[in-house]
Image: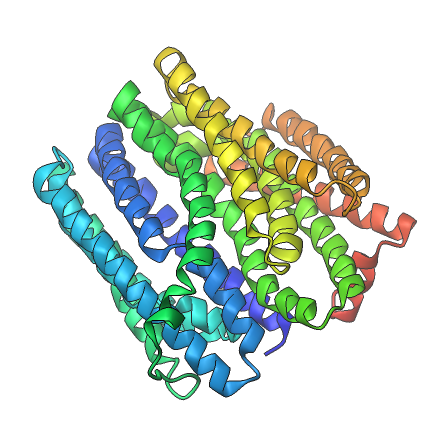
Length: 477
């Protein structure tokens, strides 16, 4: 399957996976209120942290390992068998620890934590890394989409009060488990289990654990910040932060989807030693990601004050000032993602990833401890901004001299200009447009048209390669 089709499938699925809970969010917010949203966020993020440990960085390590040997069937089968057996051991141990947490540690979130146990069980048979390494994104997208639609239907039909929050957790965790089972079934005929020695299983543990350190470190400022806000500022503040971050997280799905598709492709090019082709891919991807995230960041800043009360209800008006600065983390996330998935990981320089994200996690943790007690949810926002800035900065320090960072920073400035113009125009239009869904849609449409026109105009003037790519793919600028 072509890179373009894989990208479309993966982007569509990633966006669907995040958009579907976002579609249910207004209903949930109005049904259970700030405290209910905050309590569910608290329980789910603890569960998600356990899952990150259980998966041990396999989305990166497993995908890369399978992509490197997918044209050699015997080696492919041995690699798959060794990695999966390692996964079963690690995920099984984590599942046992999770059950201890639910039984002995969990407090008011226990009724939600029990159904979330299926999230940890799904880690035993989550083989999406193998499918992604084989560049088989279609089965993941289609089968998971079907089960999550059923889960969403259950949410709307069954949840009536805060006491029904466990149903919300059951629906989404059951969908995750069933989706993993169905996706794993897609591997039949593509790989098979073969006997492998203990040493073959163990040789995957160290490099996988190294990448897991980076994944867990990222969770400190993507997941644990919500746990810290809930514990230090209260569930109401966590509810505001959760809903502000949820939309930003939804938009970041575009970034992770592109990175996931490019990792196996660039890993294969790296094995062939085609460094110049990788550099060309990186420059195009960097521009495309920064163009996209520039539109997202400045667009959110322009409409957040109307989007939050309209989407979540008046109780969540306080999410708007949190969402505006959080939106600008998208450009930092995109920048770091391109460098990580197209330069660092294909070269198996995992320590660069670990150092950069650990630096970001340390900055975030320190900022959260200092600022959340004083600034409440806004303290977590500042910590996240500092962390997301630290990650690409740490990458740049370690990779100095290898990549054209001045050129990449020029791309940032290039797309900030139309972003600022869009922000001003949309804000100005808001003076005459009523606070309503039609008014919001009009603002977003005008902003998107202006941003797109300015970018296309700049691409024509500079003869940008992205313009040629659009023409080659059938677009009409």
